[in-house]
Length: 134
Image 1 (cartoon, rainbow, N blue to C red):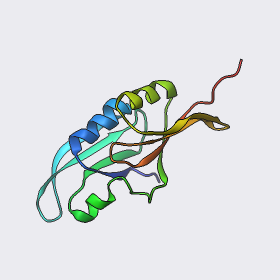
Image 2 (cartoon, rainbow, N blue to C red):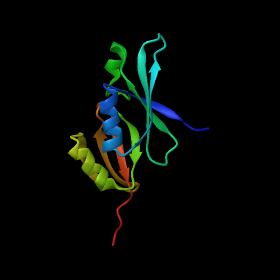
Image 3 (cartoon, rainbow, N blue to C red):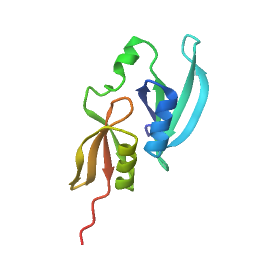
């Protein structure tokens, strides 16, 4: 058993693809035309970290209820955790893209960490390897 996909509701497909691929370094796995349950056009957009099995379905908000969920899918808590090999490079790309970092990176027993908001406002933990001591 594994989790195949989870959904992040976003305001715009193309902006979300740019953020998750260009800023976070994920791979665009699929971007296909699709339809809603009632036959309207939409896209099926999946991104995934390199070498990962679980992907993220980027779903453009459709209707007032989904628009209201943008950026608050987990009730204001950190709901997503992204572990990267190069913490400093990813942090630099986040800053350059204007992403909001909530505090400064810190060292914890499990590694480096900083909380950031994605383009929709959801909170993520960016996790990196523990710093080496000399």
